Image (tube, rainbow, N blue to C red; front, top):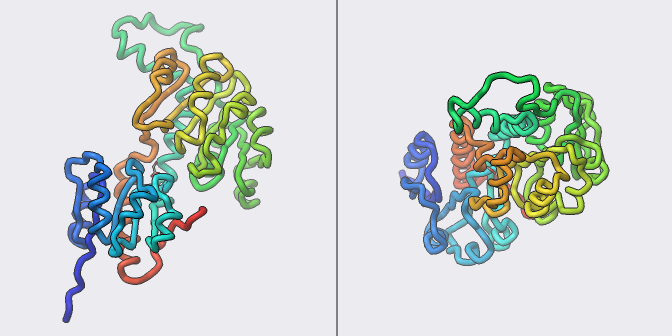
Length: 333
Ligand SMILES: O=CC(=O)O
């Protein structure tokens, strides 16, 4: 009996212990115990020797890096839902398959989106800070103090009605919001009926009519600055914008300008254009109570991360066994 050689799998970041243990059992796994992001040189060395690369959203797997890959590298099994950090076209040209981890972070991301939808108009961050930043200063309940804006009865406009957008819509409906959405294509009639959702073919028209905008589409060349200065200007000055997708879907400089000029009431952001750098003007706006900022943590649950790890493992094993992995990402998606 011949024992099959374990594939050499290079994992760029620290993963949950249970996932790393399983990876060690199954693969010749090179882990990143210290969780220091890998340098470009380290990534180049990895693609020259590993059979499988397991990157995540913080790694730039661009065409230049893929060009460096040795002939043994056949799979990039990303530990992420989004694949905007990978040049999927360049990988395909080199005969490298790319996979991701969809579905398992839908509900967690939708929960956090809903949390921001509530937090910004209801001034949750500001209120919490009163008690922690100025202990003993709270003068007690007052009829006119800390007033936010009502959520119930307002209109939400969801930009991108995929799995996460639909999960946000379900939550928003339960909070009494009416559902409006813009998507490349209309969702199926049963979902539209369930959500009593209104489809807007024109994003511009939808933006002008909603009270809260939730950005839930992936970052692709087509969605870069989809929420441009021109489109942000269509929003009502009482509107709020929440982004838990990717920073570059929104023109951040234009968003900051709108917020500073009072052309937009507030924003809740979990993602930023130059992450992990956060524009100091946004921090200032957060201190003024106009925005709530989170450090890209919408999908961050223990359960979700373990599920993501399981998906990565299934994708690798299926591929190594000679089958099509379940979460293959095709170029041009
Ligand atoms: O943002 C997180 C992911 O894409 O997995």
